Amino acid sequence: MTVWLRADHLVRRRGPLARRPDERVLLVEAESFARKLPYHPHKLTLVFAALRHFRDDLRAEGRTVDYRQVDTFEEGLTAHFEGRPDDTLVTTMPQAPGARERIERIVADAGGAVEFVPDERFLCSPGQFDTWASDGRYRHEEFYRFMRRSTGYLMDDGDPVGGEWNYDDQNRETPPDDWTPADPPTFERDETTEAVAEWVRETFDGSYDDPPYGGDWADPESFCWPVTRRQAVRALDHFVTHRLTDFGPYQDAMRGDEWAMSHSLLSTSLNLGLLLPDEVVERAIAAYEGGEAPLNSVEGFVRQVLGWREFLRHVYRREMPALADANQLGATEDVPEFYWTGETDMACLSDVVDGVRARGYSHHIERLMVLANFGLIYGVEPAQLNRWFHAGYVDAFHWVTTPNVVEMGLYGAGVFATKPYAASANYLDEMSDYCSGCPYDETKTTGEGACPFNALYWDFLDRNEDALRSNHRMGLLYTHVDNTDEEEWTEIRARADEIRRLARSGDL
Image (cartoon, rainbow, N blue to C red; front, side):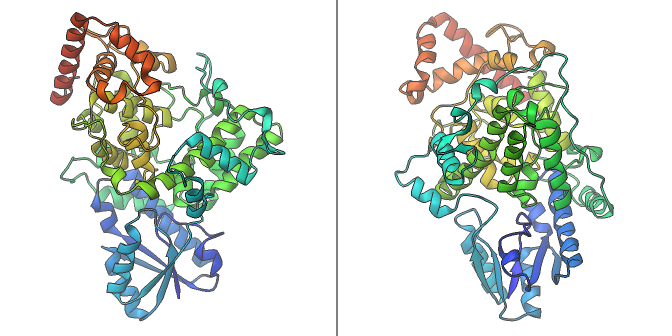
Protein backbone atom coordinates (compact mmCIF):
# COMPACT_ATOMS: atom_id res chain seq x y z
CA MET A 1 0.00 0.00 0.00
CA THR A 2 1.25 3.47 -0.92
CA VAL A 3 0.02 6.91 0.15
CA TRP A 4 -0.50 9.05 -2.95
CA LEU A 5 -0.72 12.76 -2.21
CA ARG A 6 -1.79 15.14 -4.95
CA ALA A 7 -0.16 18.56 -5.17
CA ASP A 8 -2.89 20.42 -3.28
CA HIS A 9 -3.02 17.91 -0.40
CA LEU A 10 0.29 18.60 1.29
CA VAL A 11 -0.93 17.69 4.78
CA ARG A 12 1.30 15.85 7.21
CA ARG A 13 -0.53 15.97 10.54
CA ARG A 14 -3.77 14.31 9.44
CA GLY A 15 -5.22 12.47 6.48
CA PRO A 16 -3.66 9.42 4.82
CA LEU A 17 -0.10 10.44 5.65
CA ALA A 18 -0.80 10.62 9.38
CA ARG A 19 -2.96 7.50 9.36
CA ARG A 20 -0.28 5.40 7.67
CA PRO A 21 3.04 6.60 9.12
CA ASP A 22 4.99 3.58 7.88
CA GLU A 23 3.82 3.46 4.27
CA ARG A 24 5.81 4.80 1.36
CA VAL A 25 4.62 7.99 -0.32
CA LEU A 26 4.02 8.69 -4.00
CA LEU A 27 4.21 12.24 -5.36
CA VAL A 28 3.67 12.88 -9.07
CA GLU A 29 4.90 16.08 -10.69
CA ALA A 30 3.10 16.11 -14.04
CA GLU A 31 3.97 18.83 -16.54
CA SER A 32 0.69 18.26 -18.37
CA PHE A 33 -1.11 19.83 -15.40
CA ALA A 34 0.55 23.12 -16.28
CA ARG A 35 -0.39 22.86 -19.95
CA LYS A 36 -4.01 21.84 -19.58
CA LEU A 37 -5.06 25.48 -19.11
CA PRO A 38 -3.22 28.78 -18.78
CA TYR A 39 -1.94 29.37 -15.26
CA HIS A 40 -0.19 32.33 -13.72
CA PRO A 41 3.58 31.67 -13.61
CA HIS A 42 3.55 32.29 -9.86
CA LYS A 43 0.82 29.65 -9.45
CA LEU A 44 3.02 27.10 -11.22
CA THR A 45 6.02 28.14 -9.17
CA LEU A 46 4.00 27.85 -5.97
CA VAL A 47 2.56 24.40 -6.68
CA PHE A 48 5.71 22.74 -7.98
CA ALA A 49 8.02 24.35 -5.41
CA ALA A 50 5.69 23.33 -2.58
CA LEU A 51 5.55 19.77 -3.93
CA ARG A 52 9.34 19.47 -4.13
CA HIS A 53 9.86 20.96 -0.67
CA PHE A 54 7.24 18.57 0.69
CA ARG A 55 9.18 15.67 -0.82
CA ASP A 56 12.41 16.86 0.78
CA ASP A 57 10.81 17.41 4.17
CA LEU A 58 9.28 13.92 4.19
CA ARG A 59 12.58 12.34 3.27
CA ALA A 60 14.32 14.32 6.00
CA GLU A 61 11.83 12.81 8.44
CA GLY A 62 12.73 9.32 7.27
CA ARG A 63 9.77 8.63 4.96
CA THR A 64 10.28 6.71 1.74
CA VAL A 65 9.13 8.94 -1.11
CA ASP A 66 8.77 7.97 -4.76
CA TYR A 67 8.88 11.25 -6.70
CA ARG A 68 7.86 10.97 -10.33
CA GLN A 69 8.68 13.86 -12.66
CA VAL A 70 6.73 12.98 -15.79
CA ASP A 71 4.69 14.50 -18.56
CA THR A 72 1.33 13.10 -17.45
CA PHE A 73 -0.21 11.58 -14.33
CA GLU A 74 -0.85 8.45 -16.38
CA GLU A 75 2.88 8.06 -17.02
CA GLY A 76 3.69 8.56 -13.36
CA LEU A 77 1.18 5.99 -12.18
CA THR A 78 2.20 3.49 -14.84
CA ALA A 79 5.83 3.82 -13.76
CA HIS A 80 4.82 3.35 -10.13
CA PHE A 81 2.87 0.16 -10.75
CA GLU A 82 5.59 -1.28 -12.97
CA GLY A 83 7.81 -1.25 -9.93
CA ARG A 84 5.07 -2.24 -7.48
CA PRO A 85 2.53 -4.39 -9.37
CA ASP A 86 -0.91 -4.80 -7.79
CA ASP A 87 -0.21 -2.02 -5.30
CA THR A 88 -3.10 -0.05 -3.78
CA LEU A 89 -2.88 3.71 -3.59
CA VAL A 90 -4.49 5.57 -0.71
CA THR A 91 -5.46 9.15 -1.52
CA THR A 92 -7.93 11.81 -0.47
CA MET A 93 -11.37 12.15 -1.98
CA PRO A 94 -11.34 14.78 -4.76
CA GLN A 95 -13.71 17.77 -4.79
CA ALA A 96 -15.25 17.40 -8.25
CA PRO A 97 -17.99 14.75 -8.53
CA GLY A 98 -16.51 13.15 -11.64
CA ALA A 99 -12.90 13.24 -10.49
CA ARG A 100 -13.18 10.06 -8.44
CA GLU A 101 -14.23 8.04 -11.47
CA ARG A 102 -11.43 9.53 -13.56
CA ILE A 103 -8.83 8.68 -10.92
CA GLU A 104 -10.17 5.14 -10.55
CA ARG A 105 -10.00 4.67 -14.32
CA ILE A 106 -6.45 6.01 -14.62
CA VAL A 107 -5.21 3.87 -11.74
CA ALA A 108 -6.93 0.75 -13.10
CA ASP A 109 -5.44 1.34 -16.55
CA ALA A 110 -2.01 1.63 -14.92
CA GLY A 111 -2.45 -1.75 -13.24
CA GLY A 112 -3.37 -0.92 -9.65
CA ALA A 113 -6.17 0.00 -7.30
CA VAL A 114 -7.06 3.11 -5.33
CA GLU A 115 -8.70 3.68 -1.96
CA PHE A 116 -10.17 7.08 -1.05
CA VAL A 117 -10.19 8.60 2.41
CA PRO A 118 -11.91 11.80 3.61
CA ASP A 119 -10.35 15.14 2.75
CA GLU A 120 -9.34 16.49 6.14
CA ARG A 121 -8.30 19.94 4.92
CA PHE A 122 -11.79 21.05 5.89
CA LEU A 123 -13.85 21.18 9.09
CA CYS A 124 -17.29 20.25 7.76
CA SER A 125 -17.67 16.74 6.36
CA PRO A 126 -19.86 15.99 3.33
CA GLY A 127 -22.29 14.07 5.52
CA GLN A 128 -22.52 16.92 8.02
CA PHE A 129 -23.21 19.47 5.29
CA ASP A 130 -25.71 17.24 3.50
CA THR A 131 -27.69 16.82 6.71
CA TRP A 132 -27.66 20.57 7.28
CA ALA A 133 -28.75 21.24 3.68
CA SER A 134 -31.36 18.47 3.56
CA ASP A 135 -34.06 21.00 2.61
CA GLY A 136 -32.08 21.99 -0.49
CA ARG A 137 -31.56 25.58 0.64
CA TYR A 138 -28.12 27.17 0.83
CA ARG A 139 -27.99 30.14 3.19
CA HIS A 140 -24.48 31.10 4.13
CA GLU A 141 -25.43 33.00 7.26
CA GLU A 142 -27.35 30.01 8.56
CA PHE A 143 -24.48 27.67 7.71
CA TYR A 144 -21.96 29.95 9.41
CA ARG A 145 -24.00 29.94 12.62
CA PHE A 146 -24.34 26.16 12.33
CA MET A 147 -20.55 25.85 12.10
CA ARG A 148 -20.01 28.19 15.03
CA ARG A 149 -22.33 26.07 17.16
CA SER A 150 -20.90 22.73 16.01
CA THR A 151 -17.27 23.76 16.61
CA GLY A 152 -17.81 26.03 19.61
CA TYR A 153 -15.66 28.74 18.01
CA LEU A 154 -16.46 32.20 19.39
CA MET A 155 -19.34 30.76 21.41
CA ASP A 156 -20.24 31.30 25.06
CA ASP A 157 -22.71 28.83 26.56
CA GLY A 158 -24.66 28.54 23.32
CA ASP A 159 -24.55 32.22 22.42
CA PRO A 160 -22.12 34.09 20.19
CA VAL A 161 -19.29 35.77 22.04
CA GLY A 162 -20.05 39.47 22.34
CA GLY A 163 -23.75 38.91 21.75
CA GLU A 164 -23.66 39.27 17.94
CA TRP A 165 -23.10 36.75 15.16
CA ASN A 166 -21.31 39.27 12.94
CA TYR A 167 -19.84 42.73 13.14
CA ASP A 168 -20.29 43.86 9.56
CA ASP A 169 -21.30 47.33 10.70
CA GLN A 170 -17.80 47.77 12.12
CA ASN A 171 -16.03 46.15 9.17
CA ARG A 172 -16.88 48.51 6.30
CA GLU A 173 -14.76 51.49 7.17
CA THR A 174 -12.48 53.51 4.91
CA PRO A 175 -8.99 53.97 6.33
CA PRO A 176 -7.84 57.52 7.05
CA ASP A 177 -5.40 59.13 4.65
CA ASP A 178 -2.47 58.70 7.06
CA TRP A 179 -3.12 54.98 7.62
CA THR A 180 -0.42 52.54 6.49
CA PRO A 181 -0.82 48.76 6.79
CA ALA A 182 1.94 46.49 8.00
CA ASP A 183 4.12 45.19 5.20
CA PRO A 184 3.24 41.69 3.97
CA PRO A 185 5.62 38.91 5.07
CA THR A 186 8.48 37.92 2.80
CA PHE A 187 10.26 34.61 2.44
CA GLU A 188 13.73 33.94 1.13
CA ARG A 189 13.67 31.81 -1.99
CA ASP A 190 16.05 28.91 -1.66
CA GLU A 191 17.68 26.91 -4.44
CA THR A 192 14.66 24.66 -4.88
CA THR A 193 12.22 27.53 -5.34
CA GLU A 194 14.61 29.44 -7.59
CA ALA A 195 15.09 26.37 -9.75
CA VAL A 196 11.34 25.91 -10.12
CA ALA A 197 10.83 29.59 -10.95
CA GLU A 198 13.52 29.43 -13.62
CA TRP A 199 12.05 26.24 -15.07
CA VAL A 200 8.62 27.86 -15.23
CA ARG A 201 10.04 30.93 -16.99
CA GLU A 202 11.84 28.78 -19.56
CA THR A 203 9.12 26.17 -20.10
CA PHE A 204 5.93 28.21 -20.00
CA ASP A 205 6.87 31.25 -22.02
CA GLY A 206 3.42 32.53 -22.87
CA SER A 207 2.90 30.38 -25.93
CA TYR A 208 -0.67 29.45 -25.02
CA ASP A 209 -3.03 29.58 -27.95
CA ASP A 210 -5.92 31.28 -26.18
CA PRO A 211 -5.02 33.83 -24.99
CA PRO A 212 -1.29 34.52 -25.22
CA TYR A 213 0.18 35.15 -21.83
CA GLY A 214 3.05 33.99 -19.73
CA GLY A 215 6.37 35.61 -19.00
CA ASP A 216 5.10 39.19 -18.92
CA TRP A 217 2.41 38.10 -16.50
CA ALA A 218 4.80 37.77 -13.59
CA ASP A 219 7.16 40.12 -11.87
CA PRO A 220 9.90 37.63 -10.86
CA GLU A 221 10.68 39.64 -7.73
CA SER A 222 7.08 39.73 -6.53
CA PHE A 223 6.74 36.03 -5.70
CA CYS A 224 5.90 36.11 -1.99
CA TRP A 225 4.04 32.92 -1.17
CA PRO A 226 4.94 30.30 1.42
CA VAL A 227 6.09 27.03 -0.16
CA THR A 228 6.79 25.07 3.04
CA ARG A 229 4.90 24.31 6.20
CA ARG A 230 7.39 26.36 8.22
CA GLN A 231 6.92 29.40 5.99
CA ALA A 232 3.14 29.03 6.14
CA VAL A 233 3.22 29.03 9.95
CA ARG A 234 5.35 32.17 9.85
CA ALA A 235 2.79 33.79 7.52
CA LEU A 236 0.00 32.94 9.95
CA ASP A 237 1.92 34.35 12.88
CA HIS A 238 2.74 37.52 10.93
CA PHE A 239 -0.92 38.09 10.06
CA VAL A 240 -2.20 37.59 13.58
CA THR A 241 0.58 39.68 15.11
CA HIS A 242 0.75 42.57 12.66
CA ARG A 243 -2.34 42.67 10.42
CA LEU A 244 -5.36 41.07 12.07
CA THR A 245 -6.33 44.13 14.12
CA ASP A 246 -6.78 46.29 11.01
CA PHE A 247 -8.14 43.48 8.86
CA GLY A 248 -11.69 43.79 10.22
CA PRO A 249 -12.54 47.47 9.77
CA TYR A 250 -10.74 47.84 6.43
CA GLN A 251 -11.43 44.46 4.83
CA ASP A 252 -13.74 45.98 2.20
CA ALA A 253 -11.56 49.01 1.44
CA MET A 254 -9.34 49.42 -1.61
CA ARG A 255 -6.25 51.54 -2.16
CA GLY A 256 -4.28 51.73 -5.35
CA ASP A 257 -0.91 51.75 -3.58
CA GLU A 258 -1.68 48.93 -1.12
CA TRP A 259 -2.20 45.62 -2.91
CA ALA A 260 -2.51 43.54 0.28
CA MET A 261 -4.11 46.04 2.68
CA SER A 262 -4.40 44.03 5.94
CA HIS A 263 -5.63 40.79 4.41
CA SER A 264 -4.25 37.51 5.69
CA LEU A 265 -2.62 36.24 2.45
CA LEU A 266 -3.13 32.71 3.78
CA SER A 267 -5.37 31.33 1.03
CA THR A 268 -2.53 29.66 -0.87
CA SER A 269 -1.32 27.86 2.26
CA LEU A 270 -4.84 26.72 3.17
CA ASN A 271 -5.62 25.53 -0.34
CA LEU A 272 -2.39 23.51 -0.58
CA GLY A 273 -2.78 22.01 2.89
CA LEU A 274 0.27 23.70 4.39
CA LEU A 275 -2.10 25.21 6.96
CA LEU A 276 -5.31 23.71 8.31
CA PRO A 277 -8.46 25.74 8.95
CA ASP A 278 -8.78 24.84 12.62
CA GLU A 279 -5.27 25.98 13.48
CA VAL A 280 -5.80 29.23 11.58
CA VAL A 281 -9.13 29.95 13.28
CA GLU A 282 -7.87 28.98 16.73
CA ARG A 283 -4.78 31.19 16.36
CA ALA A 284 -6.99 34.19 15.58
CA ILE A 285 -9.38 33.42 18.44
CA ALA A 286 -6.45 33.12 20.82
CA ALA A 287 -5.39 36.62 19.81
CA TYR A 288 -8.84 37.93 20.74
CA GLU A 289 -8.89 36.05 24.02
CA GLY A 290 -5.43 37.38 24.83
CA GLY A 291 -6.45 40.95 24.15
CA GLU A 292 -4.24 41.20 21.06
CA ALA A 293 -6.99 41.70 18.45
CA PRO A 294 -10.56 43.11 18.56
CA LEU A 295 -13.59 40.87 18.24
CA ASN A 296 -14.86 42.48 15.04
CA SER A 297 -11.60 41.66 13.22
CA VAL A 298 -11.39 38.13 14.57
CA GLU A 299 -15.03 37.36 13.81
CA GLY A 300 -14.66 38.71 10.27
CA PHE A 301 -11.68 36.46 9.67
CA VAL A 302 -13.33 33.41 11.25
CA ARG A 303 -16.34 34.02 9.00
CA GLN A 304 -14.13 33.79 5.90
CA VAL A 305 -12.42 30.55 6.91
CA LEU A 306 -15.02 28.68 8.95
CA GLY A 307 -18.03 29.99 7.06
CA TRP A 308 -17.35 31.00 3.48
CA ARG A 309 -14.54 28.58 2.56
CA GLU A 310 -16.34 25.54 3.96
CA PHE A 311 -19.63 26.66 2.41
CA LEU A 312 -18.21 27.04 -1.09
CA ARG A 313 -16.49 23.68 -0.96
CA HIS A 314 -19.78 21.87 -0.42
CA VAL A 315 -21.87 23.97 -2.79
CA TYR A 316 -19.32 23.06 -5.47
CA ARG A 317 -19.44 19.38 -4.53
CA ARG A 318 -23.22 19.25 -4.68
CA GLU A 319 -23.91 21.53 -7.65
CA MET A 320 -21.29 20.45 -10.14
CA PRO A 321 -21.10 19.96 -13.05
CA ALA A 322 -24.10 22.18 -13.81
CA LEU A 323 -22.68 25.08 -11.79
CA ALA A 324 -19.68 25.50 -14.09
CA ASP A 325 -21.88 26.25 -17.10
CA ALA A 326 -24.69 28.10 -15.30
CA ASN A 327 -25.79 31.33 -16.96
CA GLN A 328 -29.27 32.22 -15.73
CA LEU A 329 -29.07 35.81 -17.01
CA GLY A 330 -28.05 34.71 -20.50
CA ALA A 331 -24.83 36.76 -20.58
CA THR A 332 -22.94 36.43 -23.88
CA GLU A 333 -20.06 38.92 -23.91
CA ASP A 334 -16.44 37.77 -24.11
CA VAL A 335 -14.00 38.71 -21.38
CA PRO A 336 -12.59 42.10 -22.47
CA GLU A 337 -8.99 42.01 -23.64
CA PHE A 338 -7.90 44.45 -20.94
CA TYR A 339 -8.48 41.73 -18.33
CA TRP A 340 -5.39 40.14 -19.85
CA THR A 341 -3.38 43.27 -20.69
CA GLY A 342 -4.42 45.83 -18.08
CA GLU A 343 -4.64 48.37 -20.88
CA THR A 344 -7.67 50.50 -19.98
CA ASP A 345 -8.10 54.08 -18.78
CA MET A 346 -10.38 52.89 -15.98
CA ALA A 347 -8.13 53.36 -12.95
CA CYS A 348 -9.68 50.64 -10.78
CA LEU A 349 -9.60 47.92 -13.42
CA SER A 350 -6.17 48.87 -14.71
CA ASP A 351 -4.65 48.77 -11.22
CA VAL A 352 -6.30 45.53 -10.14
CA VAL A 353 -5.48 43.72 -13.38
CA ASP A 354 -1.88 44.95 -13.21
CA GLY A 355 -1.68 43.50 -9.70
CA VAL A 356 -3.00 40.16 -10.89
CA ARG A 357 -0.53 40.18 -13.77
CA ALA A 358 2.39 40.98 -11.47
CA ARG A 359 1.72 38.67 -8.53
CA GLY A 360 -1.37 36.54 -9.25
CA TYR A 361 -3.36 38.15 -6.47
CA SER A 362 -5.87 40.78 -5.48
CA HIS A 363 -7.91 40.79 -2.31
CA HIS A 364 -11.51 39.63 -2.10
CA ILE A 365 -13.30 42.95 -2.49
CA GLU A 366 -11.31 43.80 -5.64
CA ARG A 367 -12.25 40.40 -7.03
CA LEU A 368 -15.96 40.82 -6.28
CA MET A 369 -16.64 44.53 -6.66
CA VAL A 370 -14.18 45.50 -9.40
CA LEU A 371 -13.45 42.48 -11.60
CA ALA A 372 -16.63 40.44 -11.16
CA ASN A 373 -18.87 43.50 -10.84
CA PHE A 374 -17.67 44.88 -14.16
CA GLY A 375 -18.05 41.46 -15.77
CA LEU A 376 -21.59 41.21 -14.39
CA ILE A 377 -22.90 44.55 -15.59
CA TYR A 378 -20.94 44.36 -18.86
CA GLY A 379 -22.53 40.95 -19.53
CA VAL A 380 -19.57 38.54 -19.60
CA GLU A 381 -20.46 34.88 -19.99
CA PRO A 382 -19.80 33.37 -16.52
CA ALA A 383 -17.74 30.39 -17.69
CA GLN A 384 -15.35 32.70 -19.51
CA LEU A 385 -14.71 34.91 -16.50
CA ASN A 386 -14.34 31.81 -14.33
CA ARG A 387 -11.61 30.61 -16.64
CA TRP A 388 -9.87 33.98 -16.37
CA PHE A 389 -9.93 33.88 -12.57
CA HIS A 390 -8.68 30.30 -12.63
CA ALA A 391 -5.83 31.36 -14.88
CA GLY A 392 -4.94 34.55 -13.08
CA TYR A 393 -4.78 33.74 -9.37
CA VAL A 394 -2.20 31.85 -7.35
CA ASP A 395 -4.86 30.59 -4.94
CA ALA A 396 -7.33 29.52 -7.64
CA PHE A 397 -8.64 25.99 -7.75
CA HIS A 398 -11.79 25.07 -9.62
CA TRP A 399 -13.75 24.36 -6.43
CA VAL A 400 -12.93 27.88 -5.22
CA THR A 401 -13.36 29.97 -8.34
CA THR A 402 -16.51 28.37 -9.71
CA PRO A 403 -18.98 29.21 -6.91
CA ASN A 404 -17.20 32.50 -6.20
CA VAL A 405 -17.21 33.72 -9.80
CA VAL A 406 -20.11 32.00 -11.54
CA GLU A 407 -22.55 32.34 -8.64
CA MET A 408 -21.43 35.06 -6.24
CA GLY A 409 -19.80 37.34 -8.81
CA LEU A 410 -21.98 36.87 -11.89
CA TYR A 411 -25.24 35.58 -10.36
CA GLY A 412 -25.03 32.70 -12.79
CA ALA A 413 -27.09 30.01 -11.09
CA GLY A 414 -29.13 31.38 -8.21
CA VAL A 415 -28.23 28.41 -6.00
CA PHE A 416 -27.18 30.57 -3.04
CA ALA A 417 -26.79 34.19 -4.17
CA THR A 418 -29.97 36.05 -3.24
CA LYS A 419 -29.25 38.98 -5.55
CA PRO A 420 -26.64 40.09 -8.09
CA TYR A 421 -23.76 42.04 -6.56
CA ALA A 422 -24.00 44.86 -9.08
CA ALA A 423 -22.78 48.33 -8.20
CA SER A 424 -22.18 51.66 -9.89
CA ALA A 425 -19.24 54.02 -9.40
CA ASN A 426 -20.80 55.26 -6.15
CA TYR A 427 -19.65 52.14 -4.36
CA LEU A 428 -16.17 52.27 -5.83
CA ASP A 429 -15.78 55.92 -4.92
CA GLU A 430 -16.91 55.25 -1.35
CA MET A 431 -14.67 52.25 -0.75
CA SER A 432 -11.54 53.15 -2.73
CA ASP A 433 -9.26 55.96 -3.85
CA TYR A 434 -9.40 54.94 -7.50
CA CYS A 435 -11.92 57.50 -8.70
CA SER A 436 -9.84 60.52 -7.64
CA GLY A 437 -7.11 59.61 -10.12
CA CYS A 438 -9.27 58.30 -12.95
CA PRO A 439 -9.91 60.19 -16.22
CA TYR A 440 -13.51 58.97 -16.11
CA ASP A 441 -15.99 61.01 -14.08
CA GLU A 442 -17.62 58.88 -11.38
CA THR A 443 -20.49 61.36 -11.03
CA LYS A 444 -21.62 61.10 -14.66
CA THR A 445 -23.73 58.33 -16.19
CA THR A 446 -23.85 59.49 -19.79
CA GLY A 447 -21.91 61.85 -21.98
CA GLU A 448 -18.23 62.22 -22.70
CA GLY A 449 -15.97 60.93 -19.91
CA ALA A 450 -18.78 59.32 -17.89
CA CYS A 451 -17.62 56.39 -15.78
CA PRO A 452 -18.44 53.13 -17.59
CA PHE A 453 -19.68 51.54 -14.37
CA ASN A 454 -22.64 53.91 -14.22
CA ALA A 455 -24.25 53.40 -17.62
CA LEU A 456 -23.49 49.67 -17.53
CA TYR A 457 -25.09 49.39 -14.10
CA TRP A 458 -28.40 50.93 -15.16
CA ASP A 459 -28.30 49.09 -18.48
CA PHE A 460 -27.82 45.85 -16.53
CA LEU A 461 -30.97 46.51 -14.49
CA ASP A 462 -32.87 47.43 -17.63
CA ARG A 463 -31.97 44.46 -19.79
CA ASN A 464 -32.42 41.95 -16.91
CA GLU A 465 -35.69 43.39 -15.63
CA ASP A 466 -37.71 40.27 -16.34
CA ALA A 467 -35.37 38.17 -14.23
CA LEU A 468 -34.72 40.63 -11.41
CA ARG A 469 -37.74 42.86 -10.77
CA SER A 470 -39.54 40.21 -8.71
CA ASN A 471 -36.51 39.82 -6.42
CA HIS A 472 -37.54 41.44 -3.13
CA ARG A 473 -33.99 42.68 -2.57
CA MET A 474 -34.12 44.63 -5.83
CA GLY A 475 -37.38 46.50 -5.24
CA LEU A 476 -35.88 49.88 -4.34
CA LEU A 477 -33.60 49.82 -7.37
CA TYR A 478 -36.52 49.24 -9.71
CA THR A 479 -38.28 52.19 -8.16
CA HIS A 480 -35.41 54.27 -9.55
CA VAL A 481 -35.72 52.45 -12.87
CA ASP A 482 -39.41 53.38 -13.00
CA ASN A 483 -38.62 57.02 -12.26
CA THR A 484 -36.20 57.34 -15.18
CA ASP A 485 -37.78 58.81 -18.30
CA GLU A 486 -37.41 57.30 -21.75
CA GLU A 487 -35.12 60.04 -23.05
CA GLU A 488 -32.63 59.28 -20.29
CA TRP A 489 -32.93 55.55 -20.97
CA THR A 490 -32.07 56.17 -24.60
CA GLU A 491 -28.89 57.96 -23.53
CA ILE A 492 -28.00 55.23 -21.03
CA ARG A 493 -28.45 52.45 -23.57
CA ALA A 494 -26.42 54.35 -26.15
CA ARG A 495 -23.61 54.94 -23.65
CA ALA A 496 -23.62 51.26 -22.63
CA ASP A 497 -23.39 50.21 -26.28
CA GLU A 498 -20.53 52.66 -26.78
CA ILE A 499 -18.67 51.26 -23.77
CA ARG A 500 -18.94 47.75 -25.17
CA ARG A 501 -17.64 48.91 -28.54
CA LEU A 502 -14.69 50.63 -26.88
CA ALA A 503 -13.96 47.55 -24.75
CA ARG A 504 -14.04 45.21 -27.75
CA SER A 505 -11.68 47.45 -29.68
CA GLY A 506 -9.30 47.92 -26.76
CA ASP A 507 -9.99 51.64 -26.41
CA LEU A 508 -11.90 51.84 -23.14
